[in-house]
Image (cartoon, rainbow, N blue to C red; front, side, top):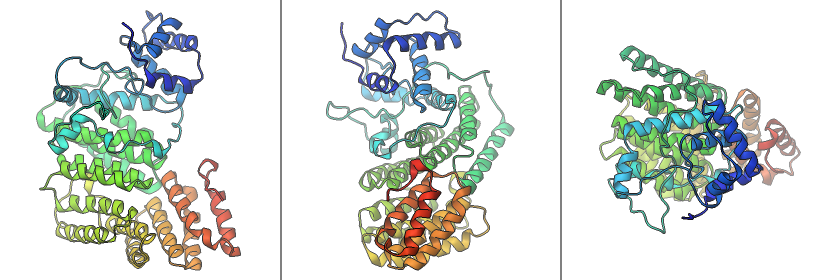
Length: 488
């Protein structure tokens, strides 16, 4: 019986420029390279996949995902192609429970990281406007975070940001076995090293190393371990996935970043760590805020808070408050910004002497002030009275950050202060800070820094008639790669 066309596959197929015959030949060739010499795909089968929604048997969906990934230069999963098989019986809640099993989460992790590592070059830059909003969170995770069962209706599409596709990851060349406490401790320490690399120079330099380590951890999680070791492994996976997401976001791979953040939250769920899951969801919100999508970020922050639970540690509450305050700042909600940041400072002070998990240790006094300055700088575009507060916080951040080797964050502090001066009508002071950024940006691998620099450039527009500002704007344009260069 004829089915509906597979629009997902059709859309991606159109991007490749292939004919149906070319795709059939590529599937057979790639399948043979993967040890699947029996594949005999032809043009008529490709037509049925696209026009009639026929789903081929394994391993063809995995082969197709690999072929499309290489062609498009970004990770394309089986779900992206519309080729994931779903159960035809049982309730939606039962399907969510199935998707939430630890082994399925491990398959999701290994499949996605494996496809990412398969790329022979850095993926194409994604358009932030295509990012999903709150629907990025899959149904099973949404239910766990909120306690609310998601009702699937015709008016509301299922949450399908990531889903298990079954089978082994494509890139495994050996089968990792169970590990002991010493190996898990080494993996925990490796996360700390990767995080320090990212803080220093930006996500572009070590992203693939982090994803490779995450892929390895995913392989380990397919084996049984004692409960405590399994919990620690899942937390390592959550931490590495969150870092992989942040590095991806930092280099402009927005779709991949969003998926890694959700994988991180799912891994934290398997570890039973609600606060870690909530923080991972808040990263999705921060990503949307980078693209100015405040209302959608607030919806995600509701999920993050629900997931972290009412008993979250003061440090976690402070961290989430700063993200939510940023969302309100984009909307010009002055009173909410003051309330949330005031509460964040109180919570942080109450938690100074408490031991912190690895993922929250970076939210220290420097980061509290850095985030607060960004929030007030954002609010200053709606309420000029926020400018002095932004300057106070960013100068504190710069003082505390001195000699810590955090070049990227230091550059962002200078961008924030320059923006405050442009907004406040102080072009000479703004130029001084912009010069500091230009002196640092060449050593960074951070599209996020370039994006913030572009925002600062926009604020300088009303002073472009000043010769010194016009010359500075030309130098900013020259310092940014052509693909990220701001319009004149």
